[in-house]
Length: 186
Image (cartoon, rainbow, N blue to C red):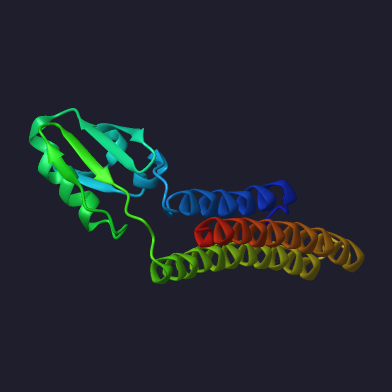
């Protein structure tokens, strides 16, 4: 049985790559406190790794300060360690069940580093979109080879896949440009 070609499914998969990038870029700090900054942090709790928002409430009491209200007092050291080890350059301080996370001013060197990280995230998203394009083109080639579609249909559908790919790559580049401007602002 031939594999069905579904342009909507390919676009959905490409959208997924763009959404993943959006989430990763949201996690890069730009010198201002934002609750989503701690989204990538995973805490070892109850014998498993959990997202930090499942063990406490994250709030932004000041422009350059995050606060994590841990629900279970026994998890406070684990949450503090997870934030410190997350590679975000943050130094949390526990006060009872509340963990305060000051957001340090970004140095020029750190800004360039964050820009490179954003670039890597964008490149991974571009690769994911191109892989979806390749999968779609492979389906079309198999269908044309089996005689399920004509060469003209293969070309026409291939052009639609390429157009969707170009739109998604362009959106990724735009997101990267915006994030780099945000990071490099002084």
